[in-house]
Amino acid sequence: MDVQLKPDIQRFVEDQVKVGRYHSVDEAINEAVSRLRVENDLLNQDLDDDDVAAIEEGLAQLNRGEGRSWESARADLRDRHLPE
Image (tube, rainbow, N blue to C red; front, side, top):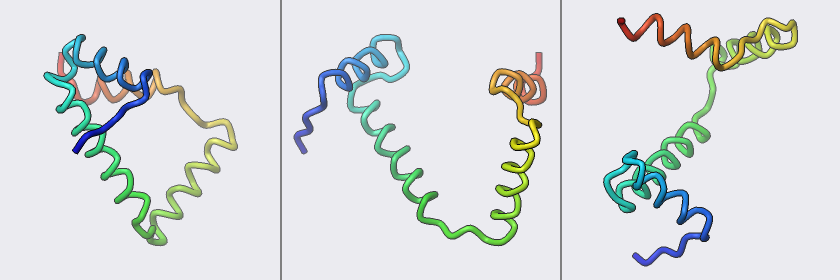
């Protein structure tokens, strides 16, 4: 398979390899396509009543101003799951 990437995407992928996030361009592209597959699978799943209720409650919490910043949530997760 021969793939042409847009120049900005090609630079991004090459930069990811340069900084060591991936060992090769092939590895980076395979990871991206794998994530796309997972996203596609998730988007095609039907939500059950409990899932819909949880989403609606989360949206209601946001509307009431009960949301948290990503930085706060990430710090909390790090504290809970990464021992010092």
